[in-house]
Image: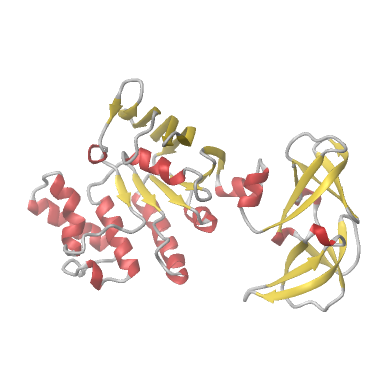
Length: 356
């Protein structure tokens, strides 16, 4: 069942288009992440859904309720949209206790004091904040402040919760723990959540579906596995994961298999779009897909080791391409490598080739 529907949303700042006809849906119980670089339009789209930005065209509905419709001239204010919103800064009132902060949306809705206290105590208990109701935000850790902000967004049981970079203010270790907590909470409570993030690991860990935005348009959408393992465009391939990039010329085309040539190398790969011999193209392969072999073989490059870096759970090895202008090629391995020439295999099914 579809919870939130966004249709053909256009929005501009000072005549500079930020959203260029974006359409998306959010199903009940689903977590969708808006992922993209700075300026891609992800935060603007979230704010348009929340009622904090006014589009110039399009339609936004939750179930059968119209929140915004440019043709019908409907534009409900943010407070009338009944959406839970967690800001990047948490936006907690410093002069209010935890209890008062969480109860604030209920106060606006004129909920009785008895019912409000019951709901606040229940949500604080569920989020691991029991006994902290009388503290002020300044007396809480960053992780606790984040949970208070989530509690405030959930206390009135909104149909959709909007999360704007909810983990960005936490340090790396706490962010990993909060990622698990947030995913478990969303699944346990059966929430429908739309989340903005620039962190692809965060998006893949929490989301059921990812919408990758680029320049105000949706570049690609799908499950985390689909977007990561089957990128349809060069932008998607390079945005997701840690990658190697090779520039070359198409020398042969067989169905979806393309042979790409560069100075001192030739490799087969998987073409994302039809290519013709002589055409310039770009090959992308994830660093973890490059295989280190002891002997030369098919689709193998013989490259000199430039340096190795210890990353804790693995080593990252950097190799020099034969042509210095071609840059380097990286691979992961379980142990350090001796200097000299090594054999790097690039499996054709993992080497994606796109028009340059």
